[in-house]
Length: 320
Image 1 (cartoon, helix red, strand yellow):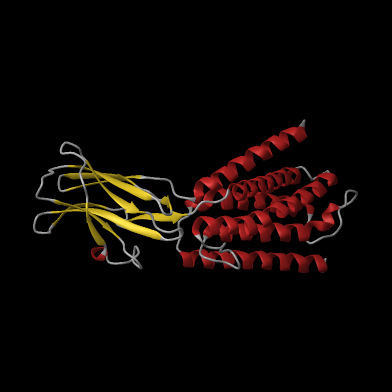
Image 2 (cartoon, one colour):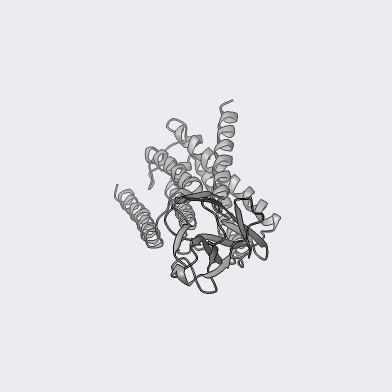
């Protein structure tokens, strides 16, 4: 019965973690509003669009609308981005479907996969003075990221591998929590961590790379470390589990605890840390917003700390 409960809990954890990971991969549309000079503007963002598609971008405008005002859509051109002076963006008039409606719109070709188009809205008076506008809350332009189509066999293969990897980590952690007086549980826990690596390595290094190439035309950035927080977190997780297995192989004896790099009491703590690190990699990565430089510094620092901790434990074990 306990085995069934452990399996069910592990499946629940794995499903939740992997679902959140895929849900965080691409941004969801967001409703943005702004009120200024008696105008109220509202739009729904289009974070991603399939390359080659024709988009309709719409903004709702409430206020003193009249024919003397200029309603403009400003979008980036080639080689321009969010750091370009916004006054250099291309101008395009917004069209109004009917005289009584509040919706203004324009048509835009989606960018190529991996490329981005930036845009915002503005209202000018007859002599070109600014009356109102709409950007992101941080005063940055809106962004549309072009994406490609990922083949189904890539999606589902990676999904299966990540589910199995996360299931193995969760089950290994639960077995570790009960291994104080049961040597068999310790050995089983280490084996499940091995199984997680067997699934994580191809799921991340191989299928994530292929998926990223189809989706954005770019490779996985985690080797050794890049500016993508998700990639770096998964590589840290893989290294952590590898060191955990390497330091715990002596604990797989079922009859007695042998002297090893990681003791049985420490092993339980490290196993829990593996689940916490998995939670950060799968669930929290989309909610952590830091700069590329900070991502790299923290990633290298954490990796250095892992190897230093392992070296200290190894030295203690050799001299005990």
